[in-house]
Picture 1 (cartoon, helix red, strand yellow):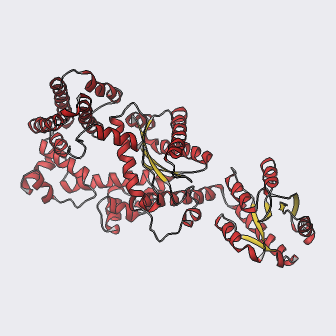
Picture 2 (cartoon, rainbow, N blue to C red):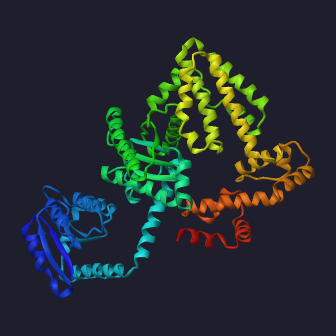
Picture 3 (cartoon, rainbow, N blue to C red):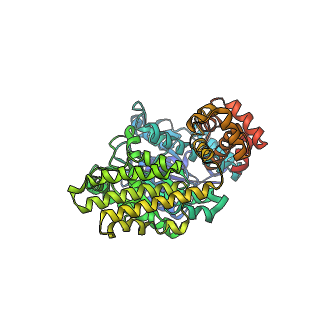
Length: 538
């Protein structure tokens, strides 16, 4: 027996519906009658056994569209909704369909056989749905979530086509508006410790973070979250106002709540970079990059958990000539482990910093802090510091503000760089430096075309000499090493992003031909890509 509620402000219409067919003989029971949407909603919140709601669209207090919105927000399974409409209600009906309603009854054609046929079909569909296994429903729900997350990823990378109508957000069940959008990059601090804590169960960590953030967004009624990787998450928020003051206030409340939830329930701390207000969704990629860059400044503005555009711009503006974007030569020298080149590039950086001397000591110290940020970020990204050392990063930055002369500060920075070079040597062990450079290049460029000739040119050796040296030092041929790295990256992508297609994984790992990738993968791992993805998703 399915419980039915009738929501209609006209008493005569309610009476007509209740007497139109023999409800109970056909497996239905009129459980409640309401005169407006608010009255119906309060009853459903207290009595969740209602299976079908038949509602008028135009009613006082709360109309049918508002009732549908409220029912969609209820936790758990919401009742099936059938709308009552007149011929002149077309616009209301269209909006109702966008909110997920599929069934309606024309008041002018409210004949017993038509109503009974509709109700019987709903009852049949309900019974079929109940026979679906819990696992099947979870798979279906999971696919919908993965599709929505993939859509958001595409928006962040290439934007939204201007040809798409704003209704695409409603159709894809997005909690977003078409305009007044902000992007926030949430970055997990001390992620190495998180990796140690979760080990091979890092997927559970990602799921917990996404669910925790999504719960906050659900409560505030706006926003979507996706994971970029286990230590980075993106939140999109939209607002009905373009007032910067009101938007900042709302973002602050939401982000503070996210920070609290992540600390309280998952025991992690985060740095959040916030973008400016994006007026149209099609421009979102630029604002995504801005949020990411603002999050990067967490290395410098380390005493703040949320970094807004105004704060980031103020810091860069007052700090004179920024070093960001000019550090590549220094990073290359560090990767090569060439002490002379590293010290030479540091001298270039010091000279550039001193050009800002006219702006005052505070600016000079900010620039030195930025240089420290570049070195520390390199150490962190390349695994040259352990968890205890990462916890002392704030002390490293404070050094820039405590040393009383620029020369002494430069000496300390040079000393830090030399310590880093020692760590690089220690990590490389007895392996030939040329081979280490080649391996680093392969690991960094595995998704590109990599040939023995190309890499031997980079290390300035002949192909035959380099090939022999590489095989002897590594214990496998150049081709075997490249294939191994690509397969490891492929398996990593499958574990972290199981929604990806095989051809997408192939492209990400440097294979233009999907069939060739599949053959190499099976030969290397013993199973096909599809079999591997099924095994890690179980």
